[in-house]
Every structure is written in C-alpha cells, then in structure tokens.
Length: 414
Image (cartoon, rainbow, N blue to C red; front, top):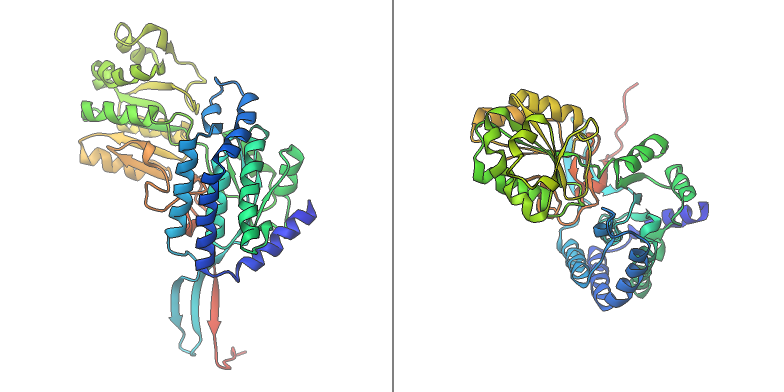
C-alpha cells in the first residue's frame, strides 16, 4: 500500500504543473467517454446489482442507468465550466515594515474518500479533486466494486491520452484492511472524507490518524409549527421525504405542534402516493388512525427517533412548542439539514438561530441541501462538522491555503 500512497503523492505534485485549460479538457473528455462507454459501465453495474437484494435501501444508490450516467457526465462538464478555486488571493496586506503578505488558495494534495455503494461518487470525486488540483485515493465498498473499477479505468484511460500521471486517481481494494491502511497513511494522505452511513463515519472518525472531515449521515427533521401553512407544509414534507429516499438530505422525522394535530391527516395525505410507512407517537397515531392507510401506520418505539431511514418510512412526533422541537432536534439530529414550516417570523428566526445544523431551512424542504442546488457545482459531500468546512463541500471547500510573503531584505529585530 505504501507504494500506492507514494504514487498518489507524486501524482499530486505533477498536477500543480497542469494548466486550467488542460484540466477542463480532461474533464470534458471523461464526460464524453462516460457516455461512449455507457454499456460497459452498466454491464459492470449489473454484476454489482445482482449481488444486492433490491429491497436493500442501498440498491437505489448503487443502481446506474443510462439517464443517470448522462446526468453524471453533465455534472462533470459543469465542473469543467466552473472557475478554478486555486490561486485566489483570500487576504492581502502590506505590513509597516514593507513585507507583502498574501493568503492564497492551494490544493490539499492527496484526498482520500471512503464511501459505500455509490458509484457516481467515483466520477464526482475525481472531477472535483482534479479541478482543485488534488490527487484522490478512493476506497469504495465491495457492493460497488465492479462499477467502480470500470469507471476508474475509463478515467485512467483519459489521463493516459493526455499524458497525465494516471495515479491522479487510485482505487484501493474493497477490503477492511485497505480502509485501515488509508486511515493511517500519515505523510501521504492529507485529508480523508467518509461518505456513507453513520456507522461508517463513526468508524473513520475514531480510527483515522490522518485529518478527517465528516460527511454523509443525515437525520433530517421538519417542524410544522402552530402557525404553519397547511398546503405549503404538505408539499414541503412530501418533497423532502419522497423525492429520493436513499440520499442524506431525505426527511426522517416530522415534528408537529400539538395545536395542529387535526391537520396531520391532510399534512400526510400526499405521502400515501408513495406508500410511506409512518412511525407515530401516541397523539400522532390517534390523529392519523382512520385516515392514513392502516397497513402503513405503526407505533413509534424508542429506536424510531434518530433513525436515518433511507427508505419510504418516516417518524412523526407531537411537540408542545418550538422550544420542544428544537430540543428534540438537538438530541436526535445529525447536524445535517433541518427545517421549520411557519408563517410566524419570530418563531422562524428563533429556530434558524438555535438549531445547530449545517443547513437550516424556513418554508423549504431539506432536499435542497446539495452543492449543485446551491450553485456550487458538484460536491464531495455534506460536511456535518464545524472544522474547516460545513455544508456542501464543493471546489472551494476541498482547497486549503498558504501564506506567501514577499520581502526585500527585511529582518526581524531581536
């Protein structure tokens, strides 16, 4: 493994010599080749899918289609069209002694990504890392190994066509041992970003000796306040829950003010079209009984709250105030995305100020937490921590900076 890590380190140094025009041409070529090799990618993906139960919540994340590959290619082209995040002067000052100080954005160097059954991440990470001047080392899950290897070979073939070191992207073996090696690759890997389940993220955070930025786990809430607009709330909750259930910004728990329990059946009615299973506490269960399909209605347990369902399932809890909703989110949220539905400006402002999450919404669904939706292009993930970057990690967030000091013989007094 040390050889792989050294090769990635060497490749990262060579990337610094590439022009932005060359990088953009490579990304466009990768997008074109992804389209041209769609059948090859789908054939590899079919092997992975054959080993997974379609009922597994990860199945949708694993599955590639011609349409999804076209979308991935479009995202890659979009990254090519974005301005370079490198070489930006973030701060500039001249000291009284004449020293000229600039803080300039630069690549991290080598970025490691640990992820699960999401082969689209392979394209996304390469595009973003190359645009940001870093080499990437990928540790995908065994569930997507055939897909990942087909994708990486396509990318490497394009790099060879441009006479660029193909070790700018490295796919490690899909083993636990490889993960451990990556997490302890001090001196070679500058940053590791885990993307996946809470269990995976916790493992990486606890085991790594290289710097880590946590992304991925999303236990997302929507609070329907006593002053919430019913049609607006029903639309927001349905979109947040059902747009795509396997992603980290999908809604997991709806909190409803006790004064609005009578509106709960109407609030949840759109969810029946997607057969969403609801796990409700006692007041919510009583309010929904007789109106929501009985086969989709279940009683909540101690394990219900704080669960990231990644499926057509959602928890509901009745609260007596915005304060109780905020306390519940503080206890069970993951710091990803939370929303309040209310027409009361003061209540909204309190929620926005006191809820501690990367993205906090007022009268909009958590499904918007996405780098492209924020106008940032593709993303590596959603950071749920506060160190270095928070929220969508796009191009600027996967760069660091250094100070450049220009002098003319000044010396520091003793």
